[in-house]
Image (cartoon, rainbow, N blue to C red; front, side):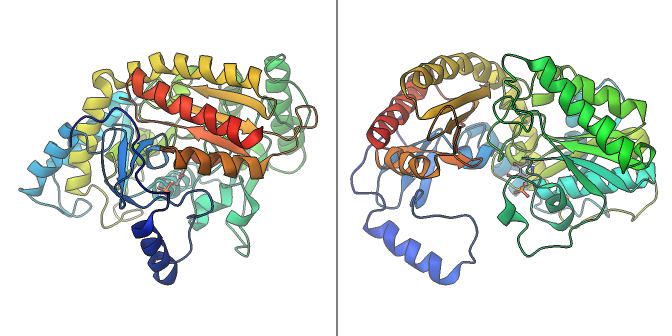
Length: 450
Ligand code: PLP
């Protein structure tokens, strides 16, 4: 495919072919999160940051398949590694026999994850599976039963991870009872928190309140701290709205956890792999977790999850935890190539272009009253839409209209939180491409909120 410089719209979106696929989809596919009201995009192929839909429209991708395509669509080096592995073996039964790609991947994860201590890795197939493994590692190693999770978090949709997920009520609708022993506490969201503290103006005050809540209210009254296995959080919340906590929060939280020998589990499934301008988001806060979960971008689109943890937490007994596809040969080859290309300049590009996003989005916030908050790091940005800046009432409908309007003009975006939009292009996007996308986004805001 030749290098494309601009979106090219040749039919309305959805076009005639897309409409037919959506109709067949709705007839045969189980309902998930698809919503033709604001994302009627039927993808056919792609390269770099550009999708082609089935009607021949060329769309700029600011969604990265929900933070999966950090290396862009079909990165040539990742594709080469997959092709080479395809010619050797696809599945080498890595939990029963042994194979080199999974060992090499574990070695690489040991190097790139924070913490100068010895680590072990459990390989799986998705984000939720890597969180389930983290829960089991923490339970096994500590022999404790309680956990702390955060309001606004998203950790997956299987029973264990769903018990922590708390970003939208319908994620848990009709699913009770979930895993017992998970207590949710407020996340120090600088823009919206139960104490109505402006966390941008008073970050330390917000951190103190959030830590005090866990220590003085939860631990002091009904959850025995010495029976808590782990605290699970996203260093930067993703589905909850791309929320960046105050700088000191992670350090204070780790201090509290260490006081009670509680393990810290950091879910980097959405924010990891270079997305925030560092390999893992938690590195912005100077903390090393005891257990780290990664997935999504790790395989550049080939399904894989990894749970990386302190060596001493390992199960140590054969068969306590395992799976069929963990360490899949194709997935490991993709992950090794992904790590190599992300390390080869993409983290720096995310940090560099992050400054452009910050500048442009904050300019938009100054211009358009409908934007309540702009937050992010690297190439992970959230823009929250409100009906009124004072009351901060969520503006859900304008958000949906902006998403659709942007798509019609050739920019694919995704919502997050209650009324936010996330801007998460591939980490190798050029400045020129980034500016094209930001212009379309701004135009959509103007069109839909004037
Ligand atoms: N954790 C986080 C932070 C996520 O963003 C997600 C998915 O969006 C998950 C876990 C679950 O990952 P998966 O959908 O691969 O199971």
